[in-house]
Image (cartoon, rainbow, N blue to C red; front, side):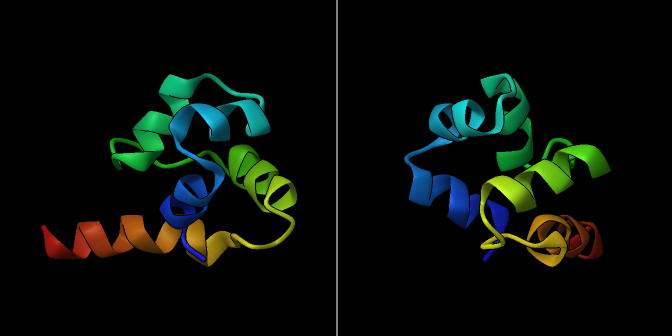
Length: 69
């Protein structure tokens, strides 16, 4: 599952931020692909999503965006 799909499944950016223990603006910047999660944030996402989101689900959308530029 991709990160944005998981965020949507949770109920949005603010809910995901609460689950992850980060500011909503941080999750918002990931959601709108303004910046990618750090490796520590990515590990937290994998853990808190209980493996629904893996590293491919986190970083593949960002790589796809870069390839389209």
